[in-house]
Length: 367
Ligand code: TRP
Image (cartoon, rainbow, N blue to C red; front, side, top):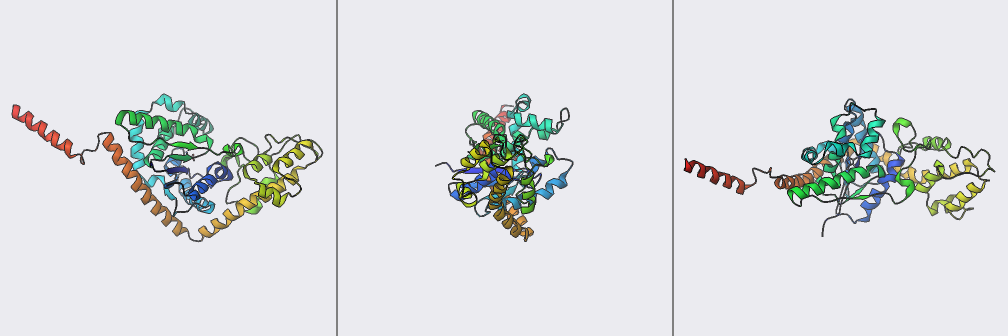
């Protein structure tokens, strides 16, 4: 049977926030602990982060360790999941270079994620080539590990489509070599794209609307207290809207029945709380206090574990170093297969050398 392999990762451009958590991190830990996967690779995508941070390498360098700590804090376990740094696996860049021949410029220009990111960064006419081609590099990340499953957020969908196209084209031209990956999206709509605390579409550091996994209990409380709700819900007795109300979106993403039983025994379910809010007579403060209790249940253990790992930073780097070695071994196997499929494996092809020797001998005999 075909091995079940996971590959996914994050750019180390900052500490990870709860959008990362519900979008992919929480799922990874579940998948890891399910025991259903033969191999799991979790990549800190520093090379990809540099595609739009070339002038700020220190930022990437600082955040590699932050992301590693966030991973460990969430429960990724190096004995089950190989955590590694992208740039330490040069096979990935080599593979991307070959894939570049299989993708057109116009295809990259149509990639919706790249399009929005170009707008967000005001690149317009000065797009770095490396940034423009990062979907290709992402295809090499995924395929170098023969990933069958890629758990990511919805924004990564176009990257997986691009990967599929490359896999099919490569296999068509060079023969069956690469594995087609499957995307694994969050199953809960609120988790697909968790809004920022200000209600804006996406959590982003530059908008200052994130709750970080490493935020203190006080910081989380403050952020929840000032969270965007329903701007027309002015008095407690007014009916309120739950659509687009960040407090309820977050509850959808984080709240379980146990949370309701534990903190709101007066309500049978989260739906009952929503109905009360919509009917009127339920204040924002009560909802926010409930959300804060739920978030603390989720975040306190993560925060605690992070603090423990922070006690021994050299050990975290050592874990990463070992992960890089392991990842590199795996990628090297695929690269051997790729090189032989592409007929650029000159030295381990005895037949080729013999054939050429024969051909040149015949040529010289004819003279
Ligand atoms: N693009 C991802 C992000 O922005 C990071 C990433 C790089 C990735 N290579 C990947 C994710 C391969 C999944 C698979 O966070």
